[in-house]
Every structure is written in structure tokens, then in C-alpha cells.
Length: 153
Image 1 (cartoon, rainbow, N blue to C red):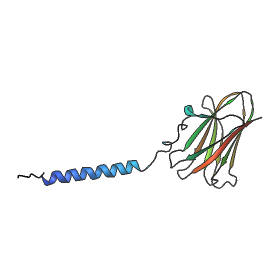
Image 2: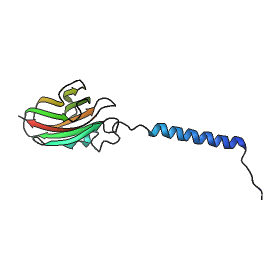
Image 3: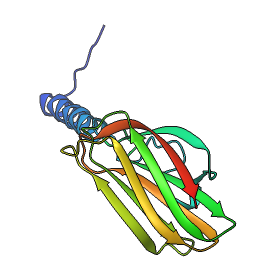
């Protein structure tokens, strides 16, 4: 019976290559991108509908891959639009933006961990039409469940 062995330098090269491959995959695989697991509402064109007078529950989790949620609201009349976001975790830094149908920012409110009230209230004078709301965890450590509602008067 004849056995052959690969030269020592070939075996070392293979071991080095395998170690580099494992190390690289560990580095790349440990971190989730901010909106990788957002659930389909991480971009404006994927916004989920929100109706005036109704409330929805959702969450943002920067480190967990759900940094951003988008909502779309259709307004039949002009008036004062009030968006309320009640956060489960008042220590989370969360921003709420209102955009018109063209993507122009109309209003912005940022809740910081130092704010005492877990309720974010964004108020804007609006015309009839389509508007987009972006709810976003500000820092990598921020995460919270929330309920969002809209009123028009």
C-alpha cells in the first residue's frame, strides 16, 4: 500500500486560507445592516398605509435591523395634521418626519432619551393629498415598540 502526502507548504497554505475564510465570514456575518430586517417598510415607496383616526402598532430596532418605518397617509381635506407616536421605551432616541408626496420634508420632531414624555407629537398645516411619515431609531442602541395615530382638524 502506497500513501502519498501533500507537501507541508501546501497543507499550511490550505490551513491559512481556511482560517482567513472563517475569520472573514465571522466579521461580515456578525453585524446586521440597519434596515436589513425592516419588514418591507424601510423605504418611502414601500410605506404602509395609515388612516386618519386609526392607530397602529409597530417597532423600530436599529441594531436588530429595523431602524426605519415608513407610513403613507391620504388626506381628503386640508387642515392641521397631528401625528402621535406613543413609545414603549421612553429612553429610545426616535425621530419622526413628515414628507409631502414629492419627498420634501415638511416637519420633524426628535425624541431624545432625556425627554420625560414618551409621546412624540408632530403637528403640521397641510393641504389635501398624500403624505409620508418616517419613524426612525436615531442611534445603534435605540429600539422601541410604538403606536402611531393621525388626526386631522
